[in-house]
Image (cartoon, rainbow, N blue to C red; front, side, top):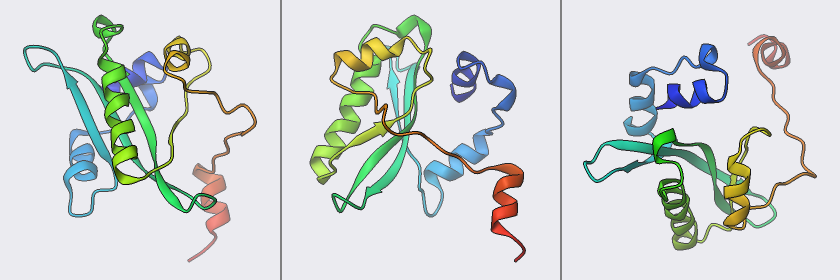
Length: 142
């Protein structure tokens, strides 16, 4: 489904994740990625949430960063996405985390859904990223 999400986000050619990589990230000796899968009545997967911990230095506690949330098109509007987010919200409350964060592509119609559950866009924050040559250049030799 990760590849389905990449296709939906118009970036299928950039998704190189393998099953082995995902398996290691989720189930290896020191997992740093966590996931939940939504299933239908026949236990067929219909959606997923992949997340990891972040940390607020101001609040002094961890939070959840939702890397990917995806529900297959035929199951959108069925409550699968809400159930996945509710699971993450419950983990936050249970563990004393104060926030659940994620990014969304600006053209994604899910913005209406997110607003309906009380999520607010953080327009005052601008994301930055270092990757590729810039990342290697900053790291420098050795």
